[in-house]
Length: 377
Image (cartoon, rainbow, N blue to C red; front, side, top):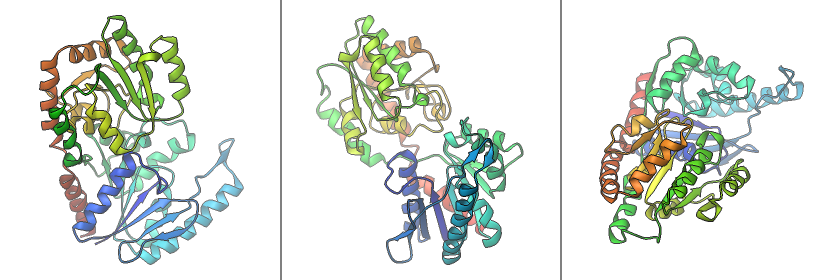
């Protein structure tokens, strides 16, 4: 089967979406399929040789003024659609799978009528939740309805996609996987070094954006410090809210106990989890929660918000702790319980590792393959 996977990010991006995208492509290739990947890029270029090719393709995101399309932007959209049409004519895919229901998916929705491929839209979170771009909100239902099939990375997200479409969709949930072997080394090193830092460490990994709720975590951490809980807070990630969050830490008089590590590689994140006592994930919304699942696979107890796909990952009090979103007091209480009770830490670590094994990449790839084959037949 000839498959085209589309990622709306640049090839150089290294977030959760991009890693999932890469894993799916690699997995389908190992199963004998020809898999081409297309990324958004500044200029048209082919990367690699052989059967499984990859391209960077510049795609214009339609710009508007007073709710009307700008002439220059409209011309560039038509130019890029023609260029993509030529590329798809060269590939002739049986199935196109667009990850993230963004404006860029609209190109593939339109071109499917010329090329006859089956179109699968995989939603990941922000693409079907809210959004401040009026154009994105306007076209989102049309994109979902134009697809032959829609997948969500959690049941909550699949239901949200159905709601956004405004009519029944052919859809299912395909959970992301986690690389158990990669994160297992954290568990092994913790056994050798059960107390790697002088004080307990609360870790958080994620982009510094409002939806990730780091401000809630800072308020909760201030409460912990006020109740004489000795701990450090490590924030791993970068983003538009960093200055604001650093200022908030200063206002709360906890800046001496909070470290902003900035963007870190996966190996650095793994090292952070090795030294962490508990992982805090206070998101306001979360399509799936890959960072939380990776922490669980590493055997780090997780305290997370009860939002989006997170209750589908943490399904019992033996696997982690779920708290209400926007509630620093409840978050602080759950963190305090874990920090002060070694037995709970051990029990949650065992349960987390056990639960993480239910999310194997092999199962994820198999479900995508079965879906694509069923559409192609």
